Length: 457
Image 1: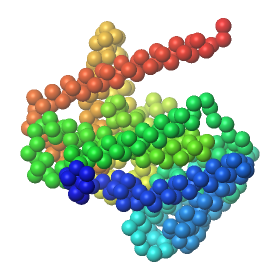
Image 2: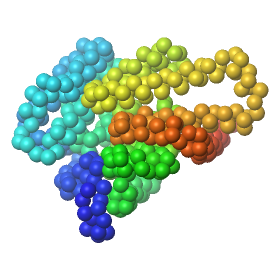
Image 3: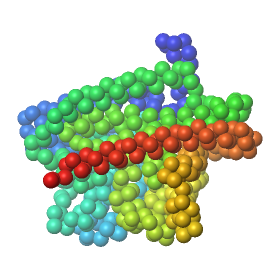
Image 4: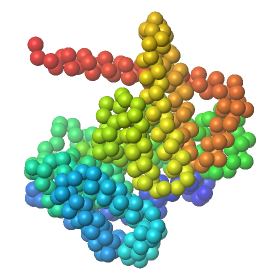
């Protein structure tokens, strides 16, 4: 922990990523993004048709200045190899080569050899190396697959480089698929919708307020440090331990929303429509909607999960799709025991939802549900949603904290706290799921009414 200058309290600094963005390297990040915004604005005013080239040139120079020319050449080598593969028009070859390239940045001895291309040694070297390399491979793979899918267009190597070296997305994401980025960045005369600039200012202001709020919060609540002290955590009441587990996932969502909010504000100034922040964990009660990076989620769904799973209504194709998706996710996160466990648990959760759905459609059970009133049917589904909600929390707590802390929470909620704590936590969660489902139903009705009004008479 670090001492807080204003509050005379220690500050929770257990999250390296937050400290990096908003304390240690805040000025460097602001300087780099401000330079991008300045040059982008000048180019948009003078020669808007060249703005994609200016984005790429500034990004490439920033990468070279930060990581060195040899690292830039290394990434260019990966870009060229996937571009050449895309000319053959074989999607399986492009995806296979992309995963091989990604593996080369995740597994020794290739990762150590390629890390040697970085010039010098500095604090952020490992983070920038992994982020820049990993996102480069995903972007190049997206380009290659889109090139295979649209042989009549035949995108050029220059299109790939302009896509890959867009600085706001380069090191930390989020990732936009190539087709979306290419269509948006090549608008000759981009025009803002009415009120869009005000929305961008509001988003920027909200991000600043959120950063300040989290910084203040860290001086009073140590939700990231406490799970590392199992003796202290073990002395907490059951309800406090459940709240601590829930708070860790909420914080991870807040962090993702803030980090992507900062980058997305810059991207929206460039007339792009970047991936939105993920859904808050509070409104998630199904595994199918659980993700903490909407950009990577969209990438995986488009090129792997939806491509293999189709409508996601058949058991075997869904199993194959989820296994393939989480295999790539495991490679992206970096293969290790805790990532293997996280992937297996979430893969099981996603498939188990489909198995339960199929079981509910089985004749006898379907007739029982049909005999229930609409309100009672929703109550039954909310009970299962509450159980699923805590399964999502426990499965993801494994990767966010530790297996030992997850075991402590599970033991206290399911064994030593049974039945009082177990039923109390499930009841509170059940009420929350009911509120979320009612909100979803209201929004669906409003959307249906809006569509009915838009239909021609």
